[in-house]
Length: 435
Image 1: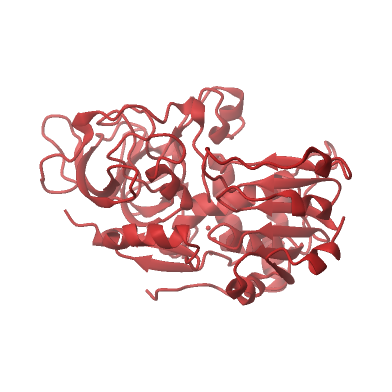
Image 2: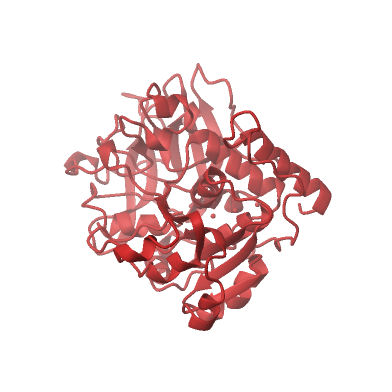
């Protein structure tokens, strides 16, 4: 496939988006998806990219088990006679330097409710870099990152009903949760009250005692946490939708972004370029904010009606009190103050970018009083909502601009991500992961 892919975002938003349930006044999920589908039919717009955050209560960080390192080389994906475990190949970070190298490790035997997947593509998320660099605490090394996974089912457990070998699927940031708390029952597993299990670096019953992610050639996941691929969707496009797609979709859905709203997107990177497309398809007028002048034309191509570079004061002053929603995707600490005066009264400024914990964002107390601005944050999304995000993007023919890379390029690509050189989502071809 070509190195860069992007379906040109259409200019029309949903023609009949109905985000509010008339009986409850709350968000109407069915209305939201009906509006998306109708928009596709009416506009002829015929798929999209996260910063996922670990749940500190999930027990995701602990001392690495020395037995979980590279095992003796053997034929990948072949069952072990003793346990039913399989050997997998991957690329792992071994310390906070960001250096990655090949590794062979074990995947668990397929249990009754498990699905074993041959990984085809895995997106490179800025969160992978943060994890690998120990920006959020020291993870259990060796660590195989990757939580934007697309592949093909090769084996299912005896109790699996939704999938069969040959199905194209995706896996996102959540691979397990308690399943019985109010959040899990409500379909919000990423907010599990007992701590969800992240796709990599989290305590689990997997070999080695913790999860390993999608920079690998195979993965075993419980059926409930596996996502269906819409018919005909390219797997390299699907992979980033499982994290970055839902990361920007979820807050827009939560706060009812809709036709007639003015929406700001701060940061035009792996998340931001996706957010512009989603907001546009919801019918909003979109303004992109970037510190990279060379991204202005791209932002307009993705659907932004206006682009503000380096917080241009004249433009910013002209937009005071005009925004219904602003989504901040910047994955590092930065000054939030210039954006608060842009908000209408009682509107939401939402953070989805998560930077180094040692350098938190700060703002002056007075800046949020003048218009009752609401400062919020959002994680990725539960399984149901992640599936919705994938379906929404596929129905509206929007998606990440991708560059497919070989596994041995990951180290250099991480540096490019940090230096804001990504245009806009790198995707690892799992076929290049050699033993």
